[in-house]
Length: 381
Ligand SMILES: [Zn+2]
Image (cartoon, rainbow, N blue to C red; front, side, top):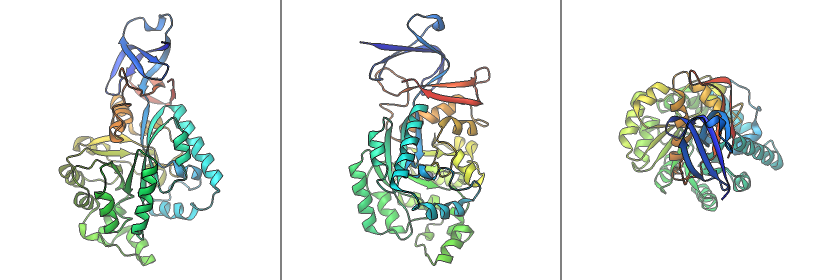
């Protein structure tokens, strides 16, 4: 059996940082062994890297199908402005342009070491790209729009059946009427992925205030779900307690919201942070310290190229590292994401028998264990 031996002074296992490791990898990418030993930089037949070896990244929130909008929407539009711009620009590109952009984004993520993606889809335009990709995708077929009809859910269900692993999921607590939201929340056992508290307007809507409420009233759209009282209470009342949920963005989650949700769910609750997208749209930041203290499991996503300059997971970590040690950030970007997508038995940690991918994180300040502006990652396996 031909194997590769890959070594570094630092290895992040998926759980913790350890020193001086040699990882032996089979031709099919599966890990044969992980061993700690001295003098690893001068061993014969060993590839040595001067960075941190990591399992492949898990991007827990992306919209590959919006890659063609890279740079099309200006920074700083704010939340409602961004939603309107997406709606305005969505039809204006050819099928080939969309496919080319999705293919290029997928290839770049793979080269940078992304092993799996939790990908939101509103249609099947990127199914072929994802089927051909070496990245593992869990597709969240997402219902969106206050006028969504029951037939639309059947269409999305057929798409999900055709591209496993997949879930049907509601977009958010502000964009779907009660019947549709309840059906999506209750049907099935695969994880849900819900955009949550990205802006203060989501909670304000329940009191008839803010830019969403103004927009809806200008358009003559009514909401039949405001009696729940808040986005968190709507989720707690509609989603069964044993269903795992990825809550994406979380910029305006308060301590009470977190308590309502964490006391409701017996299944794991994942907070998926996408700091570059929050910066791009509204210069907001998620309440990282509160979420770390509240409980639940934190993951990292990139959101789409419509609201981010890059799909780099390392760039997301750079924006979060002020408050969080690198070892913990690396866990969010690997193991936690793998658990959220229910892929932790195959990826997310470097262990014998798994095929997690092996990535080298370079240009790290190893004395302080912090990322530098030049830090980047590339795939080795
Ligand atoms: Zn999103």
